[in-house]
Length: 453
Ligand code: PHE
Image (tube, rainbow, N blue to C red; front, side):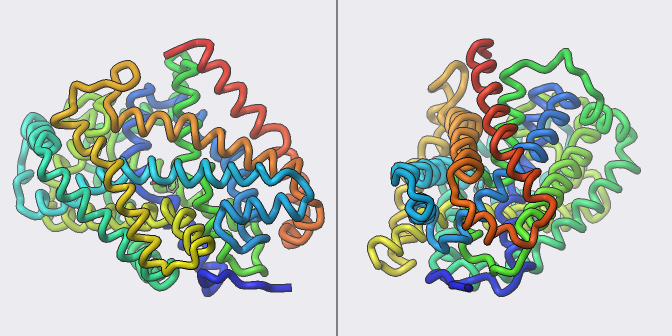
């Protein structure tokens, strides 16, 4: 039996893979992965991150696809439908609600960082980084983020673009962007890895930093951050993949598809690390520089390479596209739900959601300028706190609920039907979902809480 979603369908399994990778690959890979790996000492952190991707991330991604595809509705209604078909409490739809809230919170700071990226397209294009020094690159970055009006303007431009594309409908807006731009981004990244390997003179140092197992640097908090990064980078725990799963054709293997997406995503993150860390060491920069890391290292490298003005500009354009394809998936759960519930058009829904996200985003816009000394938790600004709280707490929590729901609650009829192309991997998935994911996430939560920061 095949049913379709009222929001449209992906034209093929490949299209689903592209769209879900479009969601997964974004600032999380190119901006966030290197900077959190740097702050947490590299090596062992990266190892924990990889373990989380494979043992926890992939099973949860499969669960999200199954729930979304079996119901063909927005996450909130999909959870409700799956709960009702499995004859359990309708309270399970709260998981969908939690995801919608997380999506708003994440997009509110995500769009600010994407705004920085947009501004860098022009800064690189203007040639200010040609032959620049690390002091100059650091100066340009702190001047820019210190200027509230500029940051606000770029944030607004990015958010408006996201809303315009989302309003057009997921497939017509997105299919084009992911089909052409993602592969180009991939190729440019490979070229940058080669550049960094051949010219920085510090490639091995960078690779060592990323892959040597320095377990003494690992704390429970950094394990929590590695796990949070795994959720964030795969777009898990808040319904983005569930929403996209609702538009996925029925005849595709779910586990194979999820694994492909995870591998691609991980590839992009590791490549970004291999580009950035050799540059960090070659230029005597600080590996724990925080959120500005990519905005200081990459322009420096482009400034030194032949044709760097043009390549740098193109590279940041592609990062902006990667960010937009992720941003779209952050609000799709909310928009699809409003359309289903209120019977309004996608346009109205997109505008409403966009307005709320814009307001919330002001806090993150101000975090690097007029509110730069306002701290919410510890030494974290508004932006840092939103980022920490959503990625390290809400997403893993949402993930546990989804794993438990798919592994223990969802009726066998739905599971058998959804996983009929997955044969021998089915029991492995079930084991990971029932035991490893929930227990793993809970242990990390509890230990991080007990140990403190
Ligand atoms: N995965 C995206 C990235 O790495 C961010 C994202 C998180 C998108 C959660 C959707 C949901 O940039």
